[in-house]
Length: 483
Image (cartoon, rainbow, N blue to C red):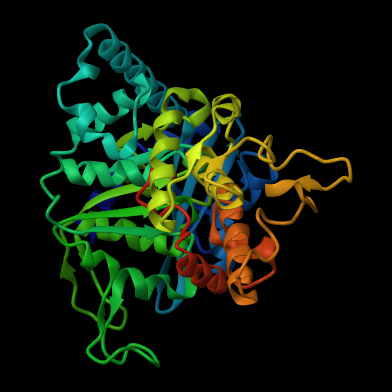
């Protein structure tokens, strides 16, 4: 059997597309795949006559991932620069025998392949968009009515909507890309509504809002007695709750590496194992993920698993920022105004002089910033007409005292929230709650995670999560295109 095992291993190493290294516990190179010679600039025979310590010292490996695994005894992933100037992603795993490190097996992939694939997809996406414009299929009958909740009017967003509608009947994983606040959550919900899973649940998870210590129990669930305080009978995790529907993982770039490994296993096996349990449970959901980060860059610096990246990057969809689709602004403004009037029981309208400012601003926080700006303007308006006074630029225009002109023209400090001060008949408690909500609303448009908001406010991340939930301001989880 040993000879057969050896032949199997030899076949895997000789035919693999990745570049394999097998290293003894002392660092001596035992074997490498033939393809490694072109990447590392040395023949297979020469590599097998040396050690990873020598290769690192000579600059062939910069750095040696096998040495890292030998030092820690744990799997690792690093970005390497080889002696030939190639940039590769290397992953390595320890092999133990009788509890002691016996060898290290590593594999690397040339990033040139990944870059070519990305460029090829970008070209195909441009050709598809050009085809839609030439053929007019972006004006598909009924599409506009189905997108009323999103207030999509620009051509580029209608093309994206049509692409999502075409992939909706499948179970292909969709990766939503784009700046914070462009509407990734809203389009994920629309994708769910178009899919055969629309009768199932849409489970929205913000990976950046769940503390790492609680992430595994929240995502995978737990059995009774798994830890102190576990609910009697255990609890189904969010993945199980998505059964028959769609699981949307926002801010996927903030997923800890340990959880990335577990997520990859769920995707591969279509099963989850609750914390403290040994019995896997089958799961059936459509996975949609979103991020405002460059996942390829995170892969390069070792913060995101390459194999998980490949699994997620099946149908990448990039949502453009609001400044590149200003045609959508009027519809978004009208929709937000309708929401605010309904929420507060008033019938406020926009003054004509506001529109020039709304259409001319770049909105670096995108739709979320626009909606938060409108809410501040709505709350600051002294009557039922929302005017541009006190709402220019990124805050309020300076008055002659060096403060800012708010509603009614009263000077306020540059850091004071809109509408600060007691209103007629308002209690201190109500004023403090309103002020807190205004501050949090502004930070929701400026920061990309609850951790960043917590750092800015000097409070704990769980406190931020609780306050956002209290005020209905959860980052990236509202069903509007501001997510």
